[in-house]
Length: 243
Image 1 (tube, one colour):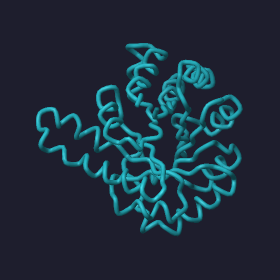
Image 2 (cartoon, helix red, strand yellow; image 1 turned 120 degrees about the vertical axis):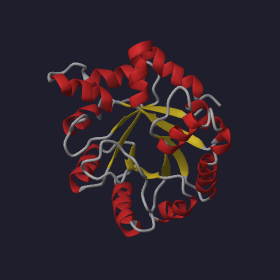
Image 3 (cartoon, helix red, strand yellow; image 1 turned 45 degrees about the vertical axis):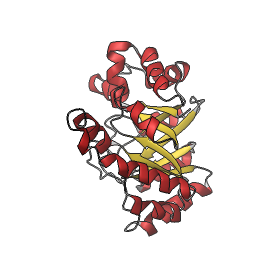
Image 4 (cartoon, helix red, strand yellow; image 1 turned 180 degrees about the vertical axis):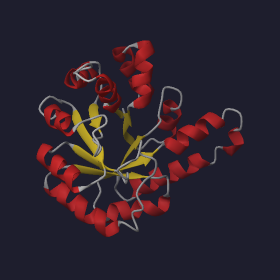
């Protein structure tokens, strides 16, 4: 079964909007695991507008499943990751002011930079995943840079999936995802996916990309939890990931 890692950033956004410690991010992480999550994902950004760097440090001894820290490998980010030593670090090419991740790495242009970063992380015993667009030409670059996995950026998939209901003939973009996944698997890279996956589009993606090891879902899952409750929502997502 594909693993579900719950991104808890949006819980931190809610906490920060009011100040104080409600909701308690540490308790949220423990509850997500108790309700069936296979991992916890955080994305600390330079302005700490949701997950704070101290949250990451505090979460490390509490997470009993898989801890995934994602972000742009600035010096501050790298110092944090190397101190915390999560199970996985997902590298994303976000500029400092980005609202959310919206593209993958150009692994050709940034090959040397990624090699240095990935080498440092792997020496610390951290599995490395590289955020990638559905572009087969960038897969080999991730492998040669030393990555263990790629995470497919599924924002474009989610957008086109919605349009395909009325214009199914235009859903050609999905071939790019399938081809990228096949190429990754063929050269020994494992596959993650994330961004805008939800209860509506997740099952189709899972069924057609059998190589999928893990999905990271935050915004949609938190929004669904408002209506369905957190425990029920996590179970609803996990049912969509069964082989």
